[in-house]
Length: 324
Image (cartoon, rainbow, N blue to C red; front, top):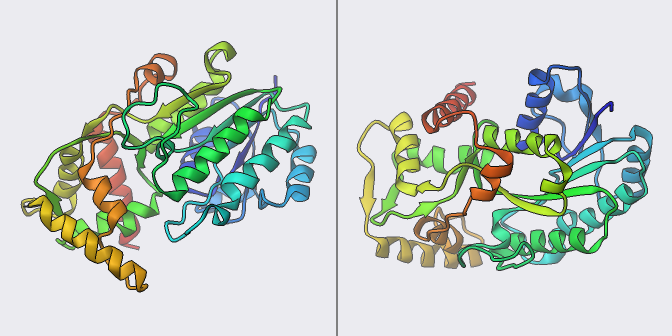
């Protein structure tokens, strides 16, 4: 079968890495189309890009009908932390419905991957069922709604839902503007507790996404997988980044200081003043949330790089970007 990939949101963080993997590491020429409202980050990806907002149903169906994809990876999403209600997350809800409708009407489509997030069930233990939700933030709630649409749509294709954990790596602007920037300036303090969190290098996630399409349908159809690497100590992750970016010893502070800073941050946010700490960041820094990755590793395998290689690749990319 001649595989034709269609990626929604392929100009983003995970999408950029996925397209790189597909066009540079596949042994055969890849037929690929990226539909996104944003241009690709890399000029070499422009030839694969076509403008499309998946909230525009007519344009979406026109493109899909014309291209006739066999494999779809849905990455497009809204993740703006400034959004205040579910109505702001149109792409995560209505966009998913539009895509499901378009897919069901396209006979060429054989397999589909829908990207969700770990935030659909966060800080409340390990979910016992795929459709058990405990969303963290409105963004997590919007992605849970998207998952429910997929499950209720009765798609006549082989479909899989993926929930990336905390993903880092090249082309992740969130870390560039946040953690990396703060560490490099010497402003970072770590709470005097150590917890286990689930992280994933983007290269691992891309390998696992591709593996889904290469796996027997009975092992992945109508299934949900968390994507990423083994859960690790948050302190180990931060120290590894810190050692590259700021040579002085990592500064440790009592947890009560972070509580106060989060309280101040919430007040500042209510008055539209920027502040480096808020409730969400505080919870992320002090709350354990490891994900059991056994089923993922059993079906999709582990990443090909070790932890040190993942961090090294990430920081080298960051330093190269920040020097330009």
